[in-house]
Length: 266
Image 1 (tube, rainbow, N blue to C red):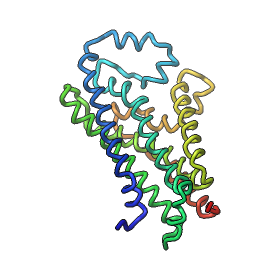
Image 2: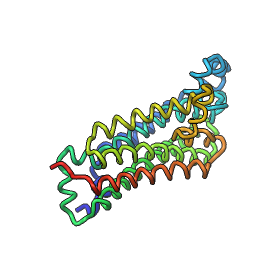
Image 3: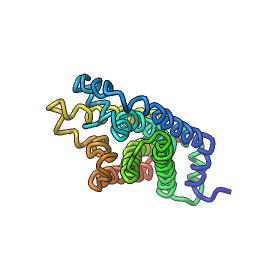
Image 4: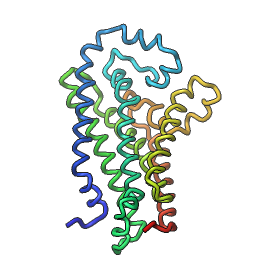
């Protein structure tokens, strides 16, 4: 018997979550396998240098060098594909937490328990956090473990820092999905709005350095807190992590207040 909403939510992911783990591990393995054929190709850096500045800003972190393991992973995995996959998971989990339960007609069963709405939502967020952190850890461990096979000299501490910032980035958008679902009860809005906001935030962070009128707004993008200080090269940034964590807390607060005062569809 499952004794909490958190464990029930994690149990409900027992089939999908292993597929996420395997998929991330295989994705990292693919990039690691390609690395030996890339590291001795100066044409790759020449290609990056010849890219339009705006395009390079969107798809390659500042100062990235394809001839080094750190630069290669920055460009190929951590600039776009890794964040995209973690955001898909977190937004999906956030949307399913309250709005998804309501759509399936199972939220009534949770509300019929002695647990308060705040407790239910908090435990749902706990499951979202656990899954997101676990997937980030899988990606980091895969990078370190599989990277050894291809002689990728990745700094362990900086990989860990990058995964922490990646998890926080995903949690920002997962918490946004949770908040929208808790306030509105609409799963479609819970998925689509965070997706649109994520795209806009990504473009804002990417084009901020090259478009003058976007520059003042760049630091408000969650992707700026994730990537601006370049954690894979420079390590953990307490300031950036604090901003991301505060954003998550604010969104969780909105979710708690909205869910507590909303009539649930029956």
